Length: 630
Ligand SMILES: [Zn+2]
Image (cartoon, rainbow, N blue to C red; front, side):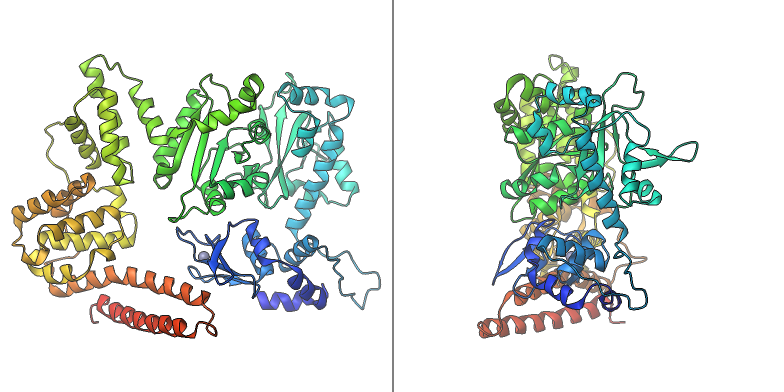
C-alpha cells in the first residue's frame, strides 16, 4: 500500500525532491514532536509506542539509519511513514509537511497533457489546517479593531498584556454574520472545507455563515503546533450562547484528545516529568506566565483516557521513570467530584496523581491576579496525593465526635483504601485512616480487607462470598495465573509438583506474586495434603492483605474446566502461564539485539542470538504443551 502510494505519488512530487526531504529530515526531531525519546544505547533512541498501548518502551528510532521500528506491534518505517501513521496524513501531505520543516521548495512533475499545471493536490488535513491558520490571522487582526474593546478589556482584567495575547494567538470574532467566511472563500477555501473545518456553518436560508460571533478566540493547537480548532469565550450579556463554545468534532479536532497548551508545554513536561492539568485557557496562560510551564487544559470535556495516553507518551511514563500528574481545582464541588471520578476510573494513575486545591477557591488565573506569580507556583508545589485528598473528602462529611460518625466514615473510606493498587502503600494508609478517624488499627484493617473482598464494610454477619478481587482478572494472562493458583490451593496433590516447578518470577500480577510466594513459604504445593488446613497455612504465610483475601477466594472458585482436573489440564495451564513470560523475554532480547552493532560487538551479538534461538525453541515447546499435545 505504502509502496504503491509512493509510485503513484512520485508522478506528482519529483523523486529527487522526495529524496532530498528524506535526507534533510532529522527523524528523531520529527518523532520527538509527539513521543519523548531517551537514549537506548548505540546511538539509538527509544520511547513509548504511539501505535499500541505499552508500559515499557519498545518503540525504537535509529537516527543513523533514518528508521523507526516498534518491537511491540511491528510498526515501522521512515519519517514520512511516521507522519502518515501518527497523524493520519497521506504520503503527499507527509512529504509536504517535512519539506516545509526543512525549508525545501517542492517541485511537482508537470502533467504533459495540460499546459497550465493545476495547483498541487493537497490532502484534506493540510487544507483544514491551512484554513485554521488563515482564521487565526483573521481573528488576531480583529482584536485591535474598535468592536473588540470588550475582548481586550477581558484579557486586561485577567492580567494578560498585549505580549501574552500575542503569544497565545488570542483573537476576536467580530459582530458580523459572514466576515470570516467571505475572507476565507476569497483565499480559495471551498464551502465544504469551511463547513468540515467547523469554521462556518450553513444558515437557515442556506447561505454560509461564521460559526463564532462576538467572542474572544483562543486557537487550539495540537502537539505539533498546528491549529486545529478554537475555543470561544462569551463577552456580551445579550449573547445567549454558553460561556465557552468550542470547535465541534471534525476530521482534525477530536476533543477527547485535545489538550490546550500542549504545544508550548511539551518540552517542559518531558524535562520535569510532570504535567499540571488546569481547567481553562486563561488558567493555562496564567500558569505559563507564572513560570509553571507544564500546564495544559482539556477543551470542553472531562479529562479522560485519551488525554492520558497523549500525556504518557510525552511524560515517558514507564516503570523506569514515573510521571506525575497534578490536577488543580478551585475547590468547588464540581472540581472535587471530577478528582474523585479520576480516582474511580484510573487505577493505573492513582499512585502518581496529585491534587492542588487553592485554599481560597480561586483558579490559577484568579490566584495570579490576586496574589501574584509566586502564589501560582506555590499552589502547584503544595499538591497532595490523590488518595489523601479523596480520603479527606470522604471523612469530612461525617461528625467524627460521635461513634456512629466515625464508624460510618470508616465504612465509606475503607473501599478507597482497598482500591489502592500499589499494595505496599495500603498498610500505610490503613494506619493513616485509623489516625484520622481516631480509631484502633484493627477494625480499620478489617473494614479494608472486607472491602477488598467485595463485602459490605463494617463487620456484618453475612456469609463469606467469593466475590472476585477485580484487578486479579484484568487480562488473559491474569486469568491463567489465577487458574494455576487455584490448582495449587484446591488440588495440591495433583498439581503440586508441576506448580512448584514454575518459579514465582513467571507471575506478573502483584497479588498473584504474593500468593505464589505464600504457597512457597507454606512449604510448597507438592508437600501439601490439601483441604482447609492447607488453605489456612497459605493464608497465614501471606503477609499481603489483598493476597490473604484472594487465597480465600481462590480456594472456593470453581476451576475453568468441565469435570475433574487431570494432569493434562495442569500441564496446559502451567505451559500457558510460562508462555506469556517467555514471549515477553523474547521481545526484550530482540530489542537488545537490534541495538547491538554485529560488527564491533560480534561476541555479544552471537551470544544473545544463541539465547534467542533457545528461547524460541522453549516457546515452541510450551506452545505444544499448552495445546495439550493435540
Ligand atoms: Zn508499537
